[in-house]
Amino acid sequence: MGITITAGKDFMDEKYQSLVSSLENHFFTDSYESRGDLNIIVKADSLIDLVLTLKTEWDFDFLSNITAVDYWPQQTPRFHVIYLLRSQGNNQLLTIRVPLEGEDPEVHTLEEVFPNANWYEREVLDLFGIKFENHSDPRRLIMPQEWEGHPLRKDYPLGYENVQFSFNKDAINERKPKAKN
Image (cartoon, rainbow, N blue to C red; front, top):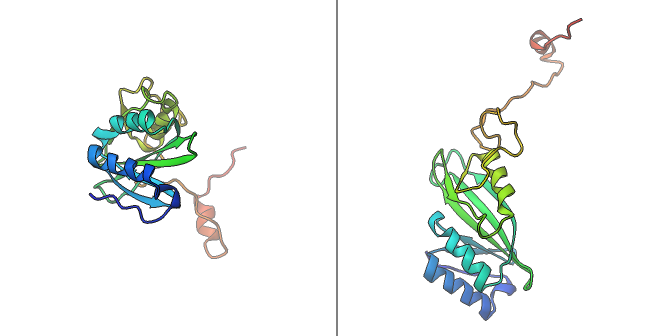
């Protein structure tokens, strides 16, 4: 897994090349540059150590978001959990991607490093079903507690109503619920 920075003037200087080299040597990450920002791919078991290193040694002091992507029907990896870190002093953005496999993905919480991770992780749990190990309050945040499933998973069944056109008007009207008097 070699790290290659192809463009992005902000990451071509010596400071960020040493960041990339340090991460490659200690966390076995892969990375790429996109629109001038560094994107790092790391295994789930290295996430906490990586984030602590970035916070203490490289001044990435603000967790601005956590989200996820579902690549279904691909199963390996099916999900990526995406963490956006910002160095406010250096005005730099860093994206960390953690690939996760299977139907019941799990990664360790970042609450002990960044307390604001709490609600972001609850949102990802609620909408994608990705669990965060040792999370302090793993309840649904957006959907009702009795809701079944995770609506942002690509295999989540869609509920919809057929659009009525002139060619299917009669078929739609037969199935359409009528108002009760």
